[in-house]
Length: 399
Ligand code: AMP
Image (cartoon, rainbow, N blue to C red; front, side, top):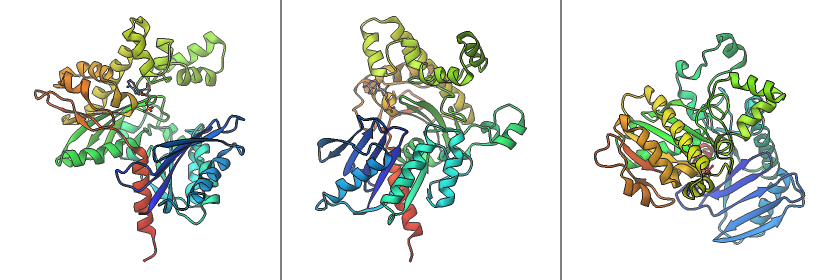
């Protein structure tokens, strides 16, 4: 069976998985971590076994070389790579769908780095080393922003001088698009009327956003020109009065960029709880009676509900609400707090179904009286990247 190597390059990590484009679990998966440091290592998970190897060549090239070496030295395994799919965070206005990577595409990915300086340069590096080492295979880029290119101008523009959009492309782009597209596809298999329906999706992980989907298309989302806008997140503040940036910079005597770092890296659940950015740890502290943990969870849920209600103004009805991402899939506490705040929309949670929702599986958690079907759907961005890569390869293959 043909397979795709899915690659997700960060600045100091590289996640990978070999997938066949079906619901089958990855044949091989793993992560290279702490790239650039002397402690860098790569983990391979195959058939339930985990092996960790130190990476002597501790950069992205070293990581991809190690993957290639692992595949070559396990040549008896049923691995049949036909392409490589790369996750790319920012595709700007250039990319409204996944594309086969050629030199022009690679240049455009590098151009989009001004809006994603931590992500796009690492993706470009990953693509270059993968092309050098797997030069005989086609490479495909799948963009987190692409799904939201269907937003209307009245949603994607910021109310700032138009000149700034015309001259600099300053606008809302939105992220988590690969996850939202996966959820839309999955929901279409669960409710055959999905194509004509309206859906709210809450992708709640360390990064968190919401999306309104109308007839399969994104019509509004909470993240903006960068992933900082919208919900409170693990370490990001989400939306706030922009004047605060200048106040923080003046009061702390730091640059605007350092003040922005506080909003990106020291805020959110971490900033309020003063415990952790990790929802599980905060829930444990809350259960033990910690007030700041309780406050952090309430703020997180309240902001998520507010943004769900806000993007819902672009829909005529709300037929489905979907929870996904590490928190959305695994935290009954947060789901309950959010749904309670959406009662005015006729959202009615089945408290028992919410509590017993099985990990890693699709489940419906709404009460019969609810106007809206409430779902937990585990996301699978890697699968969508593998599927896009397979279908683009099939489209471009010579007759
Ligand atoms: P992600 O970024 O999608 O991998 O999600 C990571 C977040 O999911 C972290 O805040 C985790 O604490 C949270 N998470 C994972 N499992 C649970 C759980 N069982 N209960 C609460 N939060 C969880």
